[in-house]
Amino acid sequence: MGVNKARLTAGFIVAGVLMVFFGTVLVFVGPIIIDDQVEKNTMIDPKNDMSYTMWKDLPVPFFMSVYFFNVLNPEEVLKGEKPMVEQRGPYVYRKRCQKENITFHPNYTVSYREYRTYYFEPSMSVGNESDLVTVPNMLVLSAAVMMENLPYALRLLISATFKTFKEGPFLTKTVGELMWGYDSKLVDFLNQYLPGMLPSSGKFGLFAEFNNSNTGLFTINTGKDDIRKVHRVDSWNGLTQLSYWRTPQCNMINGTAGQMWPPFMTKESTLPFYSPDACRSLELVYQRTGEMLGIPLYRFVAPRTMFANGSQYEPNQGFCPCRQSGLLNVSSCRHNSPVFISHPHFFNADPVLQDYVLGLNPTEEEHGLFIDIHPLTGVPLNVSIRLQLNLYIKSVSGITETGKISEVVMPLLWFEESGYIDGPVLNTFRTNLVVLPTVMEYMQYLLIALGLVTVVVASVVHHKVKRSSNPVEVFSVTENPGASAHGQVKGTHGYDTREKSLSAAEK
Image (cartoon, rainbow, N blue to C red; front, top):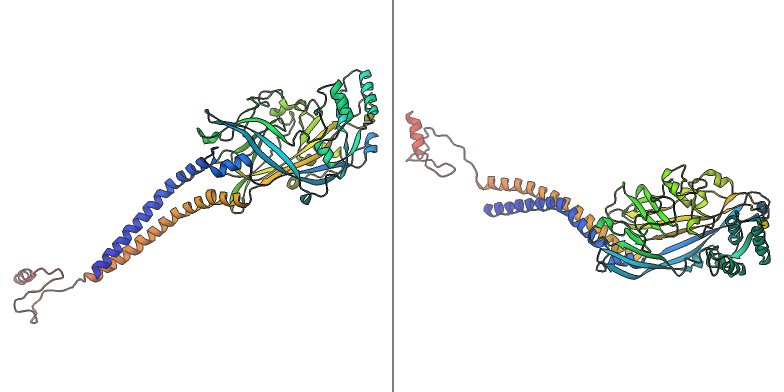
């Protein structure tokens, strides 16, 4: 019985040693296995069902929320007073993105065109697309600034044209018309006699070029040869650099297409991406760690230098001519129209911009942009890109429609493009890329701990079993009348001690 117990405890000791061994191996091999799985699941490959589907069709809800700045005092603005605006919105549109013409190339790149379509969501909006909003008339006020240096006689002729078509400095239109376009005889006239002056050749609308359109021909890296390059833009419309800006650095096409990034991010990582709508590359920086439904994340935000002018941040000199810090002049890629991009309500911009317009109240919570990234995979979990569209307006002599308007960067609207992983995609993502790696990580330490406990406990029990099955008898050899007739005493191990006893007696 004792022998069986000894064998059993010895077996437990061996099992414990094996658990410690495999646990220790997992400590070193586990991260390699996880990293290998992450690489396989984040490279752009049709064989990777989950990640390829996320990249191709963006199966998560994505929305664009639009806020208009309704002008409350248009008559006073014409007299030189500060504009007073009231934010109206949000008017929410569901955004559907789908990549088409997907073509893989032998040099580990893939090209595609991404088409986007917007659908109005009344239940998520404060009103309907039939709501009326008063805004600056871009046809008149942008044209006035663009023609400021033309001969005075020509400016008078343009002003007469505005009057003929009954176009004033401000207009009141429905949200739907301002978004997707409205018919204008003036647009038709200008496009016929001054082609290229206006950014639109059909209906004139602030987002007319967005709906049912694509963002250009992107060619990006698949990551098959180097996972650190996955999603990085190789070219856009066949270009490896732009021609809008004044320096090679500003014309660089950096980073990804703005939807996913390479895996294995650290707090020192940044999120560079190229935005066709902003006509330039942008870069977000790490702000803090966080968590979304148990999934760890890094939050990346826009640095204050993103839209800083050249005097505040030297590398941005190439984006000039600049105005106050916090504005990006995109006229060079918007048919020379005096349009500027900024953060909503001039957040992170020169305070003087807020002083020129009444009714603005910037806060980071409502107007700062951010992207929450799962650092291990580079997959965005929660996205909120917020940008504002502004028009530079001023009084131009010869064009009477501009009256005595003070020189001001006038906010037209701001919009937020947002989306987050949810539903079945979130569950699959959490299971494959969060739960399983976490289980593996805990398993390795559990095996080591359990193995050590097993070895210690089994060793103690094994020692006790051996002692109980092999008792030691303590004796002394003396003249003992009770000894056997032959003077033989058996020791614990059964050997004959008679000779030793006699030798001791003779001494």
